[in-house]
Image 1 (cartoon, helix red, strand yellow):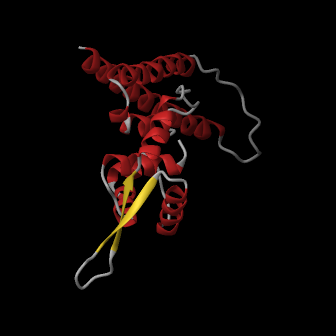
Image 2 (cartoon, helix red, strand yellow):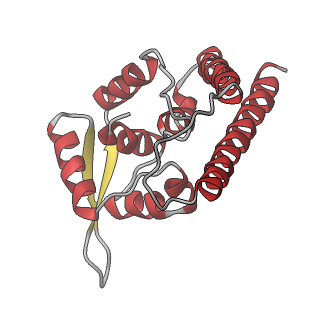
Image 3 (cartoon, rainbow, N blue to C red):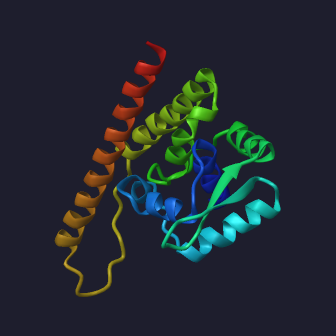
Length: 183
């Protein structure tokens, strides 16, 4: 999802200043979906979104401090966000890609059926990925001279184990979430 749509989703949930958005992106949740950005990028994007008619700013007077520009979503912004969320979800190859979590964060703008469909799509893709992951082919690598091959093999096995366990945890969370949504 484009950065502008992420900001639009947050503004659609509640009016925000650029500072509010940066604070959220720097929070634990924001870091979990891997959205690192500079404050200047947020303001440039908000200005572009205002020019496109997706958000509108109001000025809040603050006694003894600089005034705050608070952004509100417009009807055109809501339509844009809903149109973006309605696009078919194609799970990315890496389950660690933030696209699913970003879309799920904005599931409040989807119908319950669309939310369930999003989770089902991700779950089906990750179950298939789990099967491919378990059936990995181990091949001899042409390591450079001096590489400790048994140690390198152990390191790669550790990395594979980590990714496999992380993927299994993700699948388990998807199954529990789907059961809660459909139960």
